[in-house]
Length: 511
Image 1 (tube, rainbow, N blue to C red):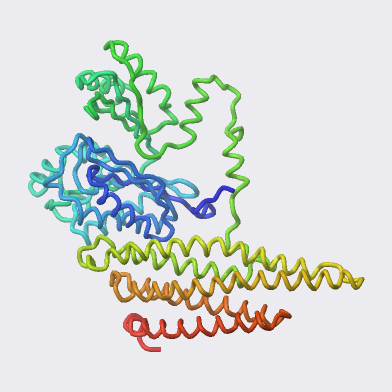
Image 2: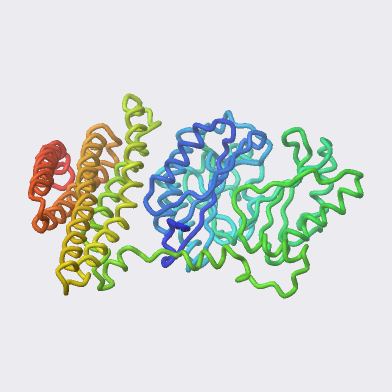
């Protein structure tokens, strides 16, 4: 079955920040981890190019989560990328070079403009980075075009920002540090599309770029540059509105130009993601599918059929399942997510270098527990459904009563194993949470404590389910064993709570 992490019933915004680093994967890893650590932000794609010395990350989610993830990524890039040492083929102005917000499901361009401006102000104020608003978020018409904002690149902006009035940023200081400057904006979906030629002659790529880009008389909504990448001439493009200038039309224009220069297209590539509609449009154009409709795509139908119900809505629906047992597993999964989040905010930080290896292990352990617990949400519901089905079996005859009683006992045993496992995993998580409270990033201390508290709550809920089932089973020896395991778990969780008590009091004050 298809699974989707994004809450499609809420507004979804996409963010595609570009970073001036494509040669050190460990730096890109750290930036990606900073994004993934933000609950509600789903990292969808990452792409790096050593020649361009540039990486593009794509993530999406609810607006608040996406804004927070963008800021976290900028913080990480600011610490790890030094623009005084950065060189590459691609034009650039800062460690975090450009941050566009794109409205997707249920979101408007106006909302993305507000997000861009709020983030720009935060970056300028808290990080001391000059920020220029561009595209739909621009406050000055000449700054709508990113090329105008980035003119002169890092060195040019560094040398002129304090003296030229036109270089004054929208937010932040009129001076450039090692992180450079950043462009933050809002725009429609853009396709980053490169075409490699069967030549190393960059002059030919330059001529083709001039022929197809709008600014020099070419196709509307096409920006293009000629470059040398991986030993080949490349036409590097941004297609800013594929609905008005389709990808197929751009490729055919380039094909005609290559013939003029007695070369050919060697291959093309995408940087980041492309809207499905753009590919469908290209296929429709080449195949001449004049009567084609989008709902004829198999995956489109599967996507619509496979949308899972929202868990909270399902709990509130007035049906027996999912119920308390599933809620225990869900709560523990949230605890695992918080533990992983704080551990990710700790690894690769100089201040916490001594604990970095252990935090990396905790991430692995917490994610494994989270995967198990997310599965347990559905397993608990299915187990309780089986108990109910057993109770509904006929009991008219003696044989039916015997069969029914056996089925009930088997179902109760199975239904007890799941919350008991959840209880055990909740204690494991509480122990991990205690570690990240003690050794993790102190800026996320409240999140670590929240993870510990959620794990303890999950244990209590799961334990209640175990005790209810133990009351009804005929095998008293098995029931006694379950209860003994619970007592041991509850003793351990009390000790772990004492470990984090001082931190809780420091954050929230005494009870």
